[in-house]
Length: 261
View 1 (cartoon, one colour):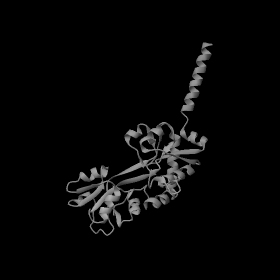
View 2: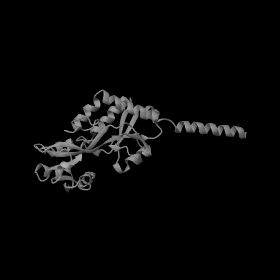
View 3: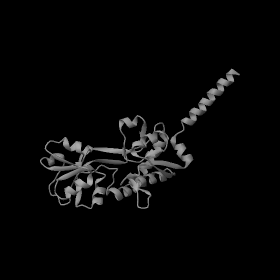
């Protein structure tokens, strides 16, 4: 009797281990949906349009990925402060919200291949004739940045550049258009959107600093899901659908680094 009880316990443990070790790919296939978390308040990446529907670059990319995986996309909105904790708790399967694959985050999550690459980038007036190739060319000049931003820190680290801080992009872009500063600095992915929104006579200038990637996090221990996700990502890049969506929002393929000039 004791032997049977022992064997039963071992069998139950084995079954439980098998269930807990089920790959996320099996889970989403059985469910038929891919639960995708976004902030929903981060244009042009993800936001609610005039109809109150989720829209934006990452929403469209999420739909393409789900289609390749033969799943229905199910979007979940979450504030940034709790989005990674929500993924860890299993409230959704992936996050599409410009998540940097840092070493600290890799301790908890696995990541897809990067789907966007960006760097800091100068913004100049549309009729600018001076060739600012980087921050060192702005010595003795005025540069507009957002107050408290990492771009302010980058700019202040360069001797001789007069850094002017502003509450946000609209303010420093307005001053740039009026000639009160010589250039501005922001994320290369956001610049086309900001210029389009403000309708000011500005353009993107030279890239600054290193290129960083954003990727799609999911819970560790799901190698089959990770492989399927990377395959889907590679397929939408190969068939041109990724580039089409990217150019709609950013005027270029953001899976490739910004080229100088």
